[in-house]
Picture (cartoon, rainbow, N blue to C red):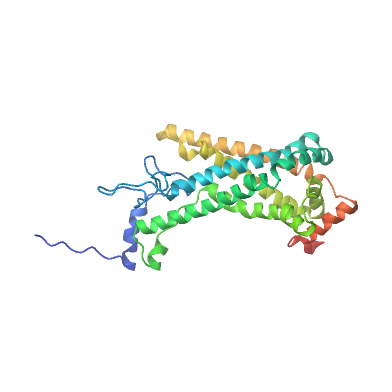
Length: 313
């Protein structure tokens, strides 16, 4: 019998040769695998071999971790979208229609108990947001682990030469949005509760007060929050509805034309959402003026505890 040569071991000098197999452009992190595949890379948990059939885990099916992480990320966005729709309506669209901060306060106070109660706020805000963020991070780490396993990277030098999964634009916007949301939640919910015992005084006048005290930072921060948030939400929903440019099935000139139309369409919807949001937030609430009296003094105290801003008083 002819003796076969042993396989060449993976050495620092041969890493580039192995990596030549990765010249195919990787898919974005937040896109699902190709049709008929349960994951980006085959694994023992997501593939079957003769004599070793796949088994269901807790009756949840034969899917790998990426399948469930993607669905956690998707369904958590549904719940948070309900809250975001109510919140944008109360804080931007209604002020834009009434052209008055004071006239819009009654609508905010009327609907706020439905999404800021002890039951609904965790269900529609805290838990969905935490699940959405952690599942996205876990999905990225899992796909990185699968890539290292697929190419047999055993040393730190090998791992450095294997690229991470490419971040899509939607995922990049999501990572940029996270600190903006945390800061907004901290200034409007956590800080008032810590100092005053609750956040009952926080309303549109509180936001207007902050715009008057710190106009440059407030306008810049609010514009960033709205812009990043609008584009992340709209592009995310375009993917859930299979309307993203990358999900066009046609090829050739027709496929390129469809991708271009979808790209312009999704960006147009994003600009429309951001424009409505900014028109009410900046045009009405941002110009509402400073609150006087004891309530205004309470607002002043709260803003003195805001990092960076408190030093400018």
